[in-house]
Length: 545
Image 1 (cartoon, one colour):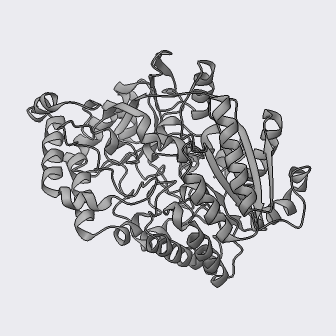
Image 2: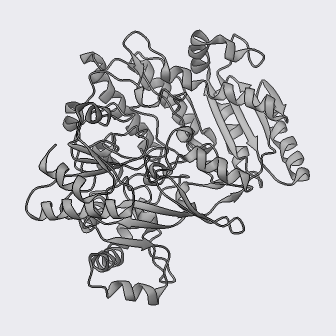
Image 3: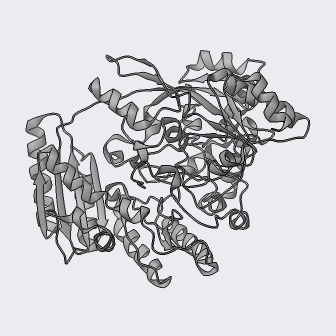
């Protein structure tokens, strides 16, 4: 064990590991990259995080930088949960619900809690937290907050950021701060602090005042944008101030989250689910447009395409029994409604059925939970694609997290099919089409030079397509290392400079997850590509995108 590891183990309540097998395990997440860490720390409490951060800050002051990467379950697909320094693993100990008020629905949670377990607990109190990602069965809440994750219910309930009311965050120097929306008087007190916290408030406040016109350029006409940092909602017209939106989606590059205060929604398990099939992209666009104009929005508008149906059928045909038969349609749509009022639920279901029948070949409606679960199982057939081996090829998470205005989903679909045609690959598409998002993971072999080159060709063309449609390259997921080289193609030089200033304000020595969001080039990515790709971390579960 190194001197640093020995020192930390002596001063921390949690465990420190440097064994080869542990470092190998934490050298990968769900991305196509690998970086060997120097040690793994399992913090038992906030004090352990503070001591670790303070120690690395002191080393950095003397010219020795040891990075810290916060990690939940390692499901990140952008390489943001790996690093060559200290990996802070939260799921082992810091995984509890600290407080919950069943009347207000407010909860205080530790970041290492499994998202699905949290959701199950909330359900017993008639509440739920929207924007649980499809990986929620095996990912953590802290990871979801760090990535501003979302799920199929984004269209109705919005992004996770909207439910985070406050945070406890350990800064790069080990100070702990609490974030929440504060008024002018409270802000002035923060500005007067002589601590690192006070310096951050002063510099961020000044930066926003001086660069507001440039910051406003980051506003896009899309449902969600994770690219860069969220500076739009920190300071409002009434003078109130809140750093919370900045930390949400920052992937541990500005601070380390130790507690999360969040709001929840009333949970309604009684839903209606409609499935429709059609063979025309223009039909899809017409349906998406009309559904987005409803006074009562669906809680989900999902899609899978015929290519995915055919691929999944070749892997496991039993899933299709009683649901859909070959020859398969070009597209299947799934529309869910979770409206509490039975009268409005019936009325809206009727409206949607008319919209679908006008545009599609076939429509079916399921009211019973058991039948809905079978229908959702068809929507989730992408899991078979993700976990299947095609010789040495695998479905790789290199593109597919972009988002465009929902009015341009037809152009997105057409563009994706053309890209895959040019690269001689078969696209299999699924995702949240009602929100302007689709997923796709091309089948490639990272051991083959030609396929490794094709990865970057696909990324170049896909991100160019997303940006040409007024979208964001980081919509469903986040920037991480994967999309860091492309951030400058999305934003102006001036806005990128503002983002870089934010990073320096919070992390002057570069100890907090360096290389994530900034400072990574295409050449850097080529150097950290895995020699082989697998999902070994999550095979206790059925892997999902």
